[in-house]
Picture 1 (cartoon, one colour):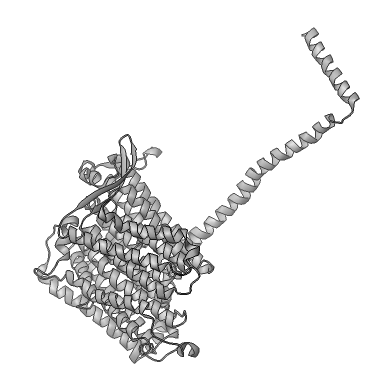
Picture 2 (cartoon, rainbow, N blue to C red; picture 1 turned 180 degrees about the horizontal axis):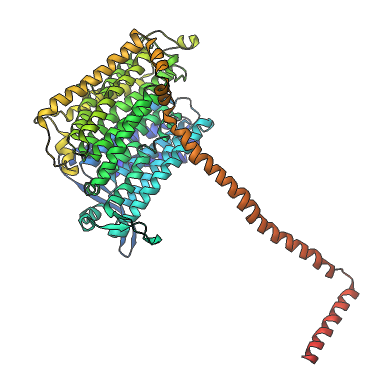
Length: 639
């Protein structure tokens, strides 16, 4: 057995053991799950060191399907992209596992939760290690299943199981497109192996497909563009891009550790990873790339705008994730896959930190999540405050924190993209201002100013235990330092050559003389956002109320999330329920039940009539026999 097989095997064995012996665990399952995921982390580091700087490893573990020319294996493709993703997944997952020990202590589903997050980690590891489309699809679905189970962990709560169902259904929409895309790949190339498909892409370049041929009409579509868009529909579901984004904020109903894991290292990162992994396809389809840029920009702006007015601390961070995922898709659409993955890595560190920091605050506030009922927590929770602050600065894109380097690399690449580069850069820079504003609105409202919550809760305010604060400290260090691998100076940018030899770089002319000016503007916008938040929520706390009143329309639109949930409810949910009811009453009750009941009724009536033949009187049976003989003889004589 290859040593790197242990990377997914450890969390899978942890899941199996805890799942089989859950009733015997008695709250001790962390002794199995935490060491297992940490062991996966160490083997991921070893793999990274072997891969670095430009080695690739291919291993076939098992020949899954072999039928004619159709061959699919379960295996591993380890290159720079895989190694970077494995470090992200196992690092964040290890810290989340440790954090869970303190955060979920006493929960009656404690052992079940550890079984599921171990399975979640295993599924994500297998997804990023996949060397073919079928393995990718299987674990793509497995990640979705795990998220459903974990969001519904507190299934007694109506909001929790509804949020899990919503996540499951919305993702099925995206996964349908993703599945059709994979089927189209197999029908064209006769293979699902990455290497085989990518090596034959040029055969299909410029080829078209008539989508309306079955209707006798003509609508020719570039076949590679069609594949790229179908695959991206799957990414829109997993990475919560507009219009399939609505499940992610509601997923906050799950326990905070799983929110951190979904937002930082698993699930939502799968879509960005997939687009980067499929870059040979997207590079041959400029139309699909432009589509991704537009969707990414719309998602980033819309989510940032909604985050400005939300009051639930976890939802603010959740909308921030949506916005940052939009940034990553914007980069991928511009062909700057390295910049997109670089931001995914730095974002994983500071977003996990912010979510776990929110969990620490909620833990201290006895479950309260409304920032209007907080304030003044800084003296009570110094470790949480300072680590949270570092995550907020990183998210705001302020140097020398990690978010500064990755976000500015995206803006720089987008500016030079050609297709609306200046417009997309302007939108991205405006979002940088909005990001800094809503992030520090959260900081100032929670940790500064007077306490506004329940007086009883105030008496019990305290810093969280070390199992919660230690992951915060580690993630704070990463939030500061991870971005240093991408300092855009000669000899200091390590991430670009490392990922670049796998993902490539867009061949375009760069306006190098404008770079310092553009970076300065983006950084100034971030600082302006922080300053404005300070004025609004520290110096003049009555000002936000006056502005929201004077700009009621814009404020209401943001507070109600553009009414997208209500629109979907009216268009899809209610109509689906009405259609299901009509099928139930019109088809199931009238036709299916009517046929079944009608047959039963007919047999019952026929049986009632036939019972007169079974009277039990001998003379009746003799009479029937005589009549029978008479009829048979008559037929014989006269016919």
